[in-house]
Length: 108
Image (cartoon, rainbow, N blue to C red):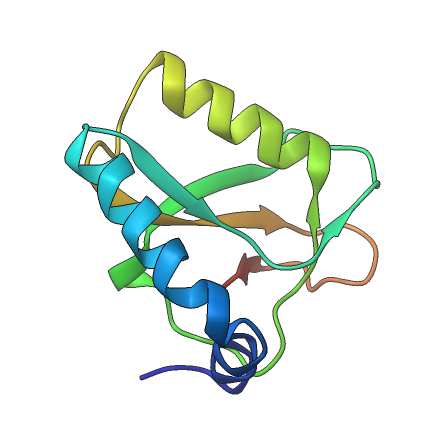
């Protein structure tokens, strides 16, 4: 099931969507991990992020924001010690201003 936000992005990016799919498949076939996130912010990262498999994610109407520094840390950690090789992942960040105290997710 695709979320409203995901459907909207697919419509807006319709001309790039095919290239995005091809690039993701190329990364995964080479043993890499694709990481998806919601809107990026410049908020400081507070060591409160993690990755989950995309198939384990439950879509939300509107994705919470993801700090750029947190995304960088999660991607570097995954590159150095892969836990999700050949997989699509979703970046999750816990708490922070404007997000709930439970784990919040960042879909595309």
